[in-house]
Image 1 (cartoon, rainbow, N blue to C red):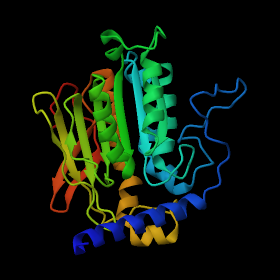
Image 2: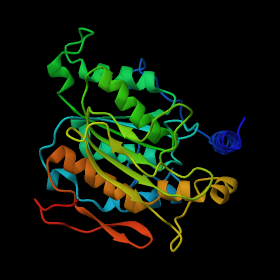
Image 3: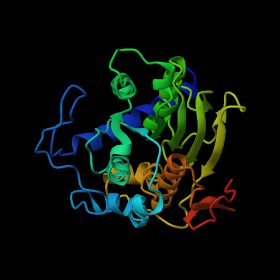
Length: 313
């Protein structure tokens, strides 16, 4: 085996060990529900990230800018129907409130209400995610998707790490079923063996990629379109944290020190605020209200109102 493959294998093993270490330290308040389980009629919906006291401070800090966003009913009373699916990295479970991706899903549920169906899945749960998505699209419950059913909702996929790579492979699964995807969002994408996380399939309308270059698992630095006439790459945004550190106390000490950049980008409030802006602009047909500015250290993201109808990219 070559030195290159040895290095890749060592990185994967170390990443798996770090993820497993985090997984074993998580105490879940409730079991993850399956697709066949109906919600309990007396169940209390999860608190929004703006109100939650269960999530660690670092996780709530990651969504602090999202929590400042104007309520949707005041800014955009009419939004398109949406199905939003998030994929988690490592061996993280969908009810782990230590992860900003999970808390972000609770924000989306509160922000869009019945207009959007939002679910989180582990990166190894693609079949379960596909089953859930098809059930949502199959409005007449005949077990088949018509052309009209496939087009009825804006499908948005987001994920971090292995979950970000799964976003691309899942979009490819939907392409084979001729199901369009409105937006894919990759946060520090890390592919598994034989995965392709840099070529966005032609059924995707818009795609964006955030990455950093440090630690054991640097993210995918570049995505491109399989068909540039059908897919718009909104950007490959290089994030750096040399001059400012992001709080990562929602991870264990070993993860924070050996792979800090990978978790800083996951906890970056500017990244989540921009993602929220992108999703809202996709569903409400508006211009994103966040601006991206270049600097010598890479791409910096900050919240700043922009005129409606202006050009962002």
